[in-house]
Length: 196
Image (cartoon, rainbow, N blue to C red; front, side, top):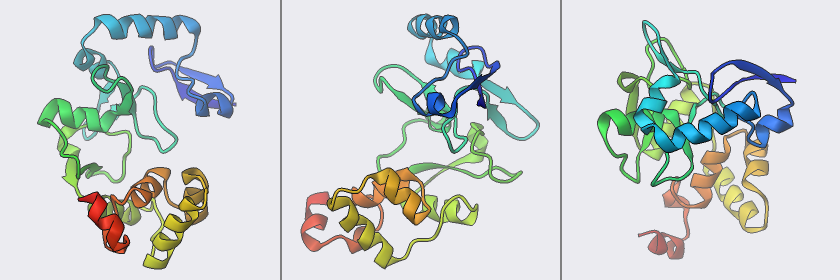
């Protein structure tokens, strides 16, 4: 059993790891139902701050989190899906995120994926995001030959999760590599033209 925080009431609860991986976010059916009803009636920015605990330095997300410790938040339309809480914080406080940029953390107290303080966030390129993750020890360094191998293995049918585990990086980075969002200079010329 592992401990998780209820996405509705914030109270810690015990669950099997497979339940968390399969998306369990609530301590009970009551909280799940209340959360669904609340989403329909309460503005997203009001719900967002329900899960923010401010401290002297960071704003800590106390709602649901992914396996890397980043908060997740259901903002409603137009996404109709959960987004990282720090990204929603950026949108709420500073506006839209350009398609080619990432929201990165720069907490003065060190790496804190749960932080949603707009003062501790900055926009960066894919390269900035990867360098930041490597510097903070959240991602291994990849070399060009590994990137080429990742793309080939993916074309041969390997899953992004298995590649992430094999190359000691997060699945999101594998996704960026296979979609050509990162390491564009290693794409074959024909693929580079389709990315324009």
